[in-house]
Image (cartoon, rainbow, N blue to C red; front, side):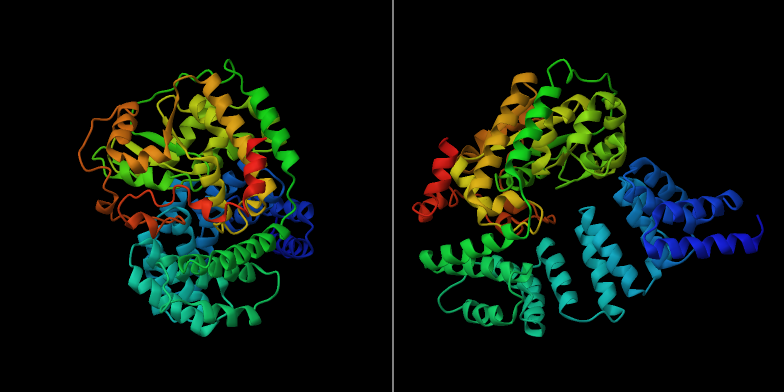
Length: 517
């Protein structure tokens, strides 16, 4: 194939990509690689096409080739890093982000992309440093202030975070996300709150938008702080209704999916693989969102033998690789579970996460929604410990209803859907306990906040760790945290949120009835 022929194939490939004709573009790019197997751009484009065609392993293979061959160009390097991260190749992503050119670049798009990638890796100090490099390179505007404010919040620089977020809403009062973060930073008072500004912001925001919902959630938080509970509930109900309308959610589908998962995952099916358990081992912290997982993670992070890694998506990424499918849990994944190589699933997970242990024998993985796949974790990782936070049904459901998780969880924005999801969660956890006796330790949230030392002793014993005084003092832990609890977990342990739902007992009566069914 001549150079002119290669150019023709590239021109056709770009035209096909612009038209959305991925099959034809793939054929052209494969012709390019037939002449030059070291064309990094062709590998990168083929990685994107493979992902859109639901071929995760091909996407990973081409991304790894692109990383090996990519030319020295900052924007191209970060595009390859994005493809690697998407396909679950975390170690290769970090290696590429450490490229000397990226340490010097002043490309604002590259710096902002890298900040997002480091944030996705839970490397919050690095994400903040990259956002500050972008500002030094000339990045401006309300979105830049918002991003830096969030990174400052995660890194426990609360005063600076508030300054950035205030500047953000000064420049663009319609950014509800920034108002919401401001409302969460501290308890509002009669003389120091944002309610008037929030009311004015509502007039300029696009009706039904995410920013509209964010402002309603911010108003709820501030009205509740002031004890104006009727008005607070009205704002909360509006915010949730706006968010639920953004989704097409089918609770019956969720119930059917998890029933099929339980039928597939029998005790015999979940018999652990014979795996090498030498080296650092993960401690999974699972449960409903807002059940206390971050609190327990902070306590364990105080132990000399545990590195707190925070919320990791790595088990889901490696499930997608093993299933060769872009979703973590759906009918296709469940149908393919019998063909999984669970030893390889465990090996890949450890390969992509053990760097987080930082020479310690244990590290946490506290992604709450891993309750969905707890049985698969136990099978693939015989050396892992699983801790399940259990919180009062009304408390945990209300805590979800009053949170804003963007578009991650449709079910939390409707009380009936939330109750249905909670019932699925409890049935699934009961199934994991039945087929995996002794593999999962239930940790009651109420016990953790009322008697943290005694509860933590049981947790450490289950994990095979010695008791160390002071672990329950979360104010000792100054490390970054990137969850909704980022401000809360800077305070000493308290039980203020137990029975918080009772302020709205009348409005939440339908939820109580649904949970009791």
